[in-house]
Length: 324
Image 1 (tube, rainbow, N blue to C red):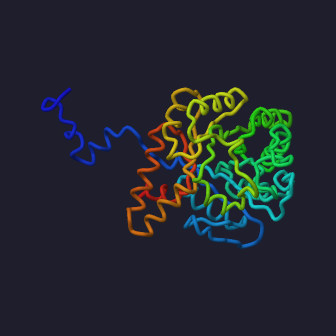
Image 2 (cartoon, rainbow, N blue to C red):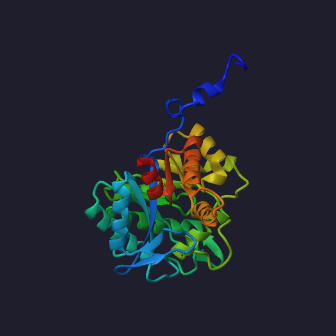
Image 3 (cartoon, rainbow, N blue to C red):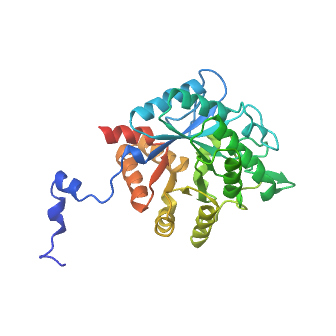
């Protein structure tokens, strides 16, 4: 079809027409809000690099979750900041750990809200790596049991879904087996399946106190240059029992989200990470762009690429904008 017989602008000339032919529709149902839980009472510590977000004690965390839920956000993702750290991340799988406490209280106060818990060890280890360290090497196989124990403790506390983010090989199968053996076969797994070793995580690491104390995470998180490897990773996690697979970060990896959506027959999540959020907020504060419009364009682009759900620090703002 060529001009003048075909005139695409005909269907762009009114708001009603644009709505009628819109191919990608973003709703609050697509959003998951990450939250940072910390011990204490009435704690609300600002995260400087993530304006509008805080380390929250359980009471304040519940207030924020209620606000999100009232706006139609169906789920939250919990991250924990422990009081103590040690080499084996014992507070990650402690019955009275911060994520366990937050999950239990959230389900008590907001039973209809889906509570997803991040399963990792980096916030809980004194070395800041996502597994057991032997010398200066992260021991993959020695880490699997601790990750599975962490997932089990979250599920027992009331988590609706567990989400391993460590990128250890074989952890999805280990967690699936642990849950099944403990009569928790109904608890699904959202796997951070294609998680890249990204510089976009900087603000999160400040918020969660999870920066590695030596080296980096290149031996277990993915090389940003690789695409085909992502398909191998998500395929492996799907075969091990993942119910949802995730690509992280989102914006620099829209091509990966698209390829995964085409090749994997499971729901796809994408994480609009802290650095992506911080950049937009910083530019908005400078007056360099319209923050709300860029937020909505960004989230729409992630869904257009193929994501069924989006973890985003914009969840409350976006849900409010969508309801206005």
